[in-house]
Each structure stands twice: as C-alpha cells, then as structure tokens.
Length: 412
Image (cartoon, rainbow, N blue to C red):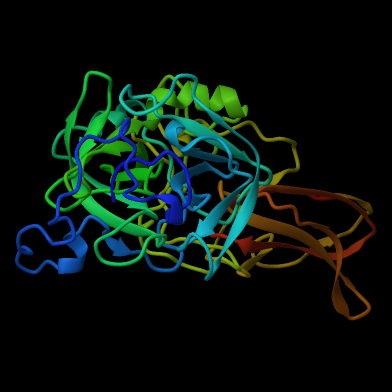
C-alpha cells in the first residue's frame, strides 16, 4: 500500500501521484510481481496491496472521503495526514470505502497541522468526531519507552484502502513489512520488495506488536516512490501535544503527551489480536482478547495502591463481559434484601472503547421489574435510586464490546 495523494476520489486519481509528494514513476512493469514468492508464502500476501482484512479486522483503520485513510486513536479522535486536507464531514468505518457492512460517523471538525505535509516529519491532521465510537477496541499510540522499539528491523503492519496489485481500489488491506531507517526529521522509512502502501493509503496507520503482546500504532502514511518500493511515515507520538491541544482530548491513556509514564484508569484492556475481527459493524466490533493493565514503561494501574473507599458501606464487585448482550447479576451473581428504605447507589466503571449499561431490578408482583437504568453510549454508568424495602438485583450488560469492569455499590 503506499504513499501519498492530495485528495480527490478514486476516479479522479489518474496515476495518483502528486509530484510534490512522490519521487519516481511506475514503469511498464509495475503491474507484475517482483521476484518469486518465498517458500510457503502466498503470492497475494507480498504484493503492495496486501491481503484484504476480515470483517471487523483492524477496525480502527477508517476511510476519509474515499481518498485517504485514517486511524481512530480515541473514541472521538481520528488522526491522518495533512496532505489529505480537512474537508471531511464524516468518517467511514468498515472494510470498504462504500457499500457493504460499515457505518459513517459525522465529524465536528477536521484540522491540518500548520505547515504540515510530506517531507518534514509533521504530516499531521486530525478529525474530532461528533459522537464517540465506543464499540471499537482502541489500539493506543506508541509513546515514551514504547516508541524506542521503532528501530531498523522492527516488524510492522500497514493498513489502508488504497491501490493494490491484487484487487480493486477501496478495500481495506493489510501488509507486513519492516522498518528500514529513521531520518533526521524522524520520518520512518518502511517497505520495499513489493511490500508497501500506495495511493489512497495516505494518512493510514502503521502498527507494531510490543513486548507484552499487545499492539501500538505509531505511523501515518505520508509519501514514497513507485508503489512496492517503500515509503515514508510520520510518527504519531511526535504530534501528540498538537493532537491533544487541537481536540481538547487526552489521547494517550498511559502517558503524558511528552511521553512521561502517567497511567490513567484507561491504561488497560488493549487488543492482543486486532487483525482478527469479532462481532459486526451493526452490533459492535468487539475485538478479540485484551491485555491487562499496561506496565510497558512503569508501574501499571493494577499495581498502584488502591483508592480509599468512597464510603464506609461501599462494596466493589468485579466481572468480565465477553461481548454484546453478555450480562452479569450483581452483587456476586445474586439478589440482595433491603430491610430499610433508602438509596441504592451504583457506579459502573467499564474499559475504554465499550458500551456497558447498568440497571436495577426489584422483585414485585411475583416477577423482576426494572426500576432504574443507565444506558448511555459510555463504558461508565451510575444510578441512584430511592427505594422501599424488598429484594433487588443489579444487572451489568454489554451493549457493545467486551472487557473487565468494576461496580461500586452502596446499599441501604
């Protein structure tokens, strides 16, 4: 997949190469594979277009106007390349730039880094979404000591919707390659030998797996020569402060924007297999197995001293939901009896990138009846219900996504 375009739809691309962004032209042999497949390697997997992803695979890779690719790095934030421009009223989530399963999400605004573009390491742009996407597991940005793993020889994966040797434009594909070098302006050169990004992949992500088995995103597809010969990528962490200042959102859950280790409650539950999709775009791309609390650059949140109890009578429940419609009964899988009237208070804390709901049931008239519920699009919910004596039960349910939650209860 490969380097840059400066906007426009696929039908308007021509040869797709902007002279300011590209060095080199395709020759008459550009449609032929280079060399022979290595033993055991599929011919499809080594052409620059890569292999198509499965349903909900690499779900944070999104399409911008059918002409560029971007990356969801927070439920409300998409990063991409400055040379793609800022005219994107919506972002497309799915495996194709149009048609098939998927959805479009409106943007609040898109903005280009001042002076940004190919060649200086600051090919940065960002869109803030009008509503959060909470049913896609976020691959976090490589920050701090994690970014130290971006060195020559590091294995990486590029993803995008661009041109390919093995199929039509506009299909999400992925290809594995390695880092070749890093320039003085911190641009990373990746690919070659038929493994590359191409026109239409501009702005899209480069992922890497780090030592704990989870994944990070670090690259923004910027520019290159003939497709298949490799290209240059800006590094997301270099622009972290600008992305956060522009959107007003903390997009680095484990670090400060300067790379200092400072884990928040969201510094956990990161995808271990983002290439393997799970769920559907209609009901939520729940993803596969998630990591525990990250400890890549310091003490993880799970090892930190527990917070002081919120109240003398509070109790904390923990549980894990496997995906959409999975549910738990709390406390401890059972109901409880309130022998006096008073407030039933619950605070649900779910993992980042999911939509968990909370409800309170009461036994009345020989059946369980819902007396209070909280069903926002957030992973976190809270309820305070003034109840009479009787039998009650709390229900934690996944509307979209999976992961471990905590539920703090204060009962009459």
